[in-house]
Length: 325
Image (cartoon, rainbow, N blue to C red; front, side, top):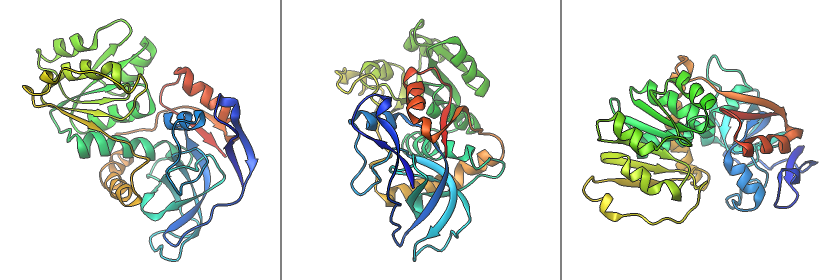
């Protein structure tokens, strides 16, 4: 099969389409012929050499895919050859074929094309597991998502609105803020020209929001804590701005704040299976009802993975970038 190989850590140009061995399929796995995969920030970190795949995972990038089942392991009963599916991966999406544990496979949602289904597994599992399963975001609460125009952000806005939540977002320009507004965001904040802490306080009568989803890390840590309501929960899923920060612990105690950190890729396959089952039960009906739609900025052929990475790192996109085999 062909796959995108990271020839050495470095710029997007190190991504090269090469002929490689087909993956081996274990008893509890299926082999998917990939139709499409979607970019995630983790892919760019892996390319740079700073985010290695978990032990035993495919060495190729790609944390989600859609495609058709080509073979099934001996202990697989739910799925059969020819089924159209999408899947959460530990790696290997940037390839023509990928072997996937059975617990990480999802049906293509009704009304969604096989190609567009690749846009959902990673964002749905990330947002549902952190914001809802860990952060317990509930109807009637308020929620701030940083990077509202990203793949994670565009999904989180729609899912939170579907759950009856008031949604705040930050983004870096008016085009991105307008896209967030169109997806349902109630309060849109330009982080380059506005102080998001002051804006959140002004819009909540000084109380703050109940849950924050943050991918920035260190530079936002204290600001996020200052933006939370009593019993607020901060969910950190990325460290784009840095990993080391100093905070005032005195800001945690009076408001009973919780700081949660989570990464999806390093979880065990058993843990991922629990998340995927929850997503199928709770998120998939919202997608099939048209309440949550795929937001896709651009489709590129797998051979243009380097161009796709350059686009992601420019941060000019809104929503997901897909690679099609």
